[in-house]
Image 1 (cartoon, chains in turn purple, blue):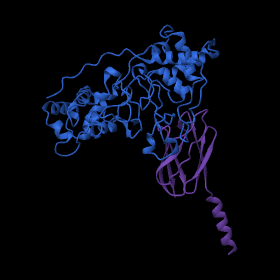
Image 2: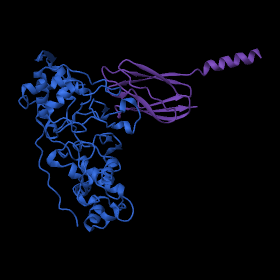
Image 3: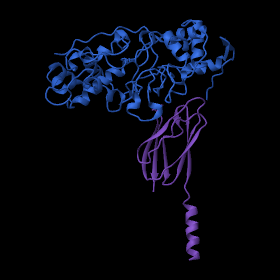
Amino acid sequence: MKYAILVCLMFSAHVQAGEHTVTQKDKKFSQTEIKIKVGDSISFKNDEKDVTHNVYSLGPTNEFELKSQAPGEVSKVEFKKPGTTDVECAIHTGMKLKVTVEK
Amino acid sequence: MKRTVFIIFPVIFLGVAWASSDLSDLKAKYARPKSIPYLDDNKYTEEREILGKNLFFDPRLSGSNSISCSTCHNPSFAWGDGLAKGVGHGHKVLGRKSPTVLNLAWTEKLMWDGRFNWLEGQALGPIGSEAEMNMKMEGPGGLVEKIKGIAGYRELFAKAYPGEELKLELIAKAIAVYERGIISGEAPFDRWINGDEKAISDIAKQGFQIFNGKANCVACHSGWSFTDGSFHDIGVKDNDIGRGKFLKLKSQQHAFKTPGLRNITLRGPYMHGGNEKSLEDVVEFYNRGGNVKRESLSASIKPLNLSADEKKALVAFMSTLTSKDKPVDLPILPR
């Protein structure tokens, strides 16, 4: 039993959720695609000098909306379901990011 | 790698000093593009442009046979209609101003509220709208049947899209090819950024710096056509929620697309409802931070505290964005 608990603890340490960062600068995301694992989170950081963004997901999975994000603000989103999610800025519609969440 | 070295002389305008290297970098951001983008599945050919032009100017694309795309997007009015609000089927006044179709080949989200993607996806919208051109689109008596019934169009489609079935999608594609080529010509501003210092006045040069500095118009009106295609509530006081009808986000309530500024002196009245009569009125509107405070108001909209001279300089600068474009030859429509 002791060994079983130890193995479980070791295993859980290895599957710790990953943390990723995507920045917004010059009305662009720092990347156009990102692949993450279920349970991982992405910190969306507005790195602009004076431009506000409104990042949200178009779905079909992991829907979210970050509200208006002023320069310097960071918002963290956990992706709980597998699948792909298209992310855009509602204000600057040329900003596009595809998030692929793998099991 | 070659590097350009700029000799730095400070240029002082209305109390704002800019290094000439900064000014050169700034000018470079407004350089005209070298080519027009077309979609991979709808490339440019002369035959497609000719077909699209005929369709664009043909009132038979409307239910009443009396309204064409060019009724509201008239080249004589810088591809708008010169009215505060468009006029649609049955001479009824529409809810918004007819926007220009100048320089749209680079724009993904179209219409004031961004509900259509690219010109290929937008072209049929106003034709099929009951309020606008009121054309039946599908089935007997619909647009495809009507166009197929005109021998001249059958020939034009066969040349433009050989082997392809004449259907709604193809009509939209042909119109889009024509519209993608509707580009404003070289304006005094372009000649200035290309090195002709006499192309615009000193006060207009001051206005350019205010546009990019104190007034921060560039936050949205950026790039060669002076728009980043973004959607904002700028504080126009009316009940139109704009993009908010399709996107239920706070920032998109009362949000409308940022229009480009090319040929802007020919495009009044201004704003989505034609509320502002002159460019001077527009500058006053922004200087007071819009006409209404509400939750959705863009963070970029706030009082600017511009002096009278600064406001004049801004208008002088915007006036340099108008080109002397060649008159458009109207097509003899196919029968």
